[in-house]
Length: 382
Image (cartoon, rainbow, N blue to C red; front, side):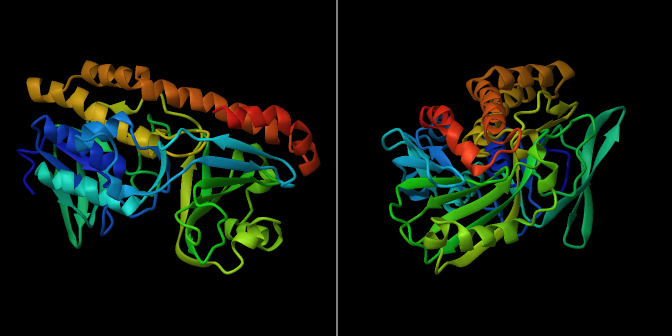
């Protein structure tokens, strides 16, 4: 691959990386996407998203998310205390909150990227950044058994947490990164496929069920490890199995379950990183905290930041032919002060308050039931 005509290299072919690439390409720049896996968007992202988000209208030039990407329209969410004696019932905006088919969304983004003539490269693992005079000027990557170096005008890092690539130490990842399992399960017993379910546990942990039908759902479990040292040695697989055996609701839902997808994940709950760039390189997506710190969901926020960055920084690069340090600073301010940037900061404050109420200090299930009425309003009115 010749680096002479490459304007932008995007590392990572998930939703953030593909969307940023599409946005830069629409400015008229030459863009290459390097994805280390053998397919784009390999890690599943089960999300509850707003189908009418602005970024979908800009990406697809339609009224919102394509219908082909939508599995189910959710009407409500139920949140249970550890004892399950109390719960909160949150009514969702009519017709707006949907469960997506992540694979179809990725396919749609790949289709758009191909239409924009973006150079899409799978099985291409970035090994290291090439630095000179405190600037990232290029990168080295491996494709099958061959190694190459490339020197674009701009690098966009959208590789998520599951990468061996060292992020420059000056850019610190979100403070609170939590382990999780994400699973697709069949043969479930789901009373209402339009209702999301969340189960707080007697330790700082949560299990969720995102139905796809009355027999199929994404489920997950995660631990807020920052709230208790005693959780650091807990095995998530064993914890989930135990709760399915003993939990009064979960054991009914999953009595005859079959897992068809099962993967370890990392979720950022610490809020957005304030500065996400170095000269010639800008980092976006999960690894920079561009996800909601209450729910850990980041499709709309990562899509929006990736697209907006492509429009702001891309226009400058197209006009000037190169980028100056002040251009990076200006684009960072645009992100931080945007509607999505302000929302991420608000979510960070809400997340801290929520976790402290429930789990700091650690409380018994009975104690959580006693304070639930105070907490219930927060959940139902989000």
